[in-house]
Length: 219
Image (cartoon, rainbow, N blue to C red):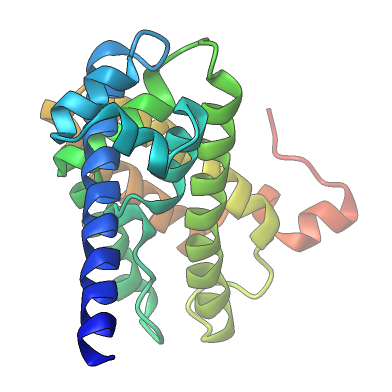
């Protein structure tokens, strides 16, 4: 019985390793050739497995794309440190973004999401990007809510508006870093420093009282 259990565990581990190889190969092929043009035969060859092995693990290209977006380990998915002060959380945020655009696997996955353009798989790509964005924005929300509770930012700041602003800023930042990788560090630090100044000294239109009273910033 013990031998059978050991063999079963080894078989499961081997299957998981094969699945991982396929995902890593698909990430490379989809990035290099474009999702529409990529053939699963090419993925199989790069992974060092048969086409049958690819289809055993994944029904089709759609299934591989979904698995890539949900399972591939990238720094952007790291959890924010618990009980970190605002400045330490910002240091963590800068490191996560730098590691994400600097990591080869993560950069190629984000390039598929951001830069593939309109393709036959655009719905899956868009949905994958949406899921990743929501996951990351939960981290941003946790940072801002903690800072608000700890009195590090004004209790009158409109967190909903600030989070929407952050979502646009971070999405644009990642896009620019993919387009201009040589400037990624300066871009990330500049944007994050600006955002930190913004929430520490928020303009009137980012305060709850401004929304409640119907005030608008001067134009």
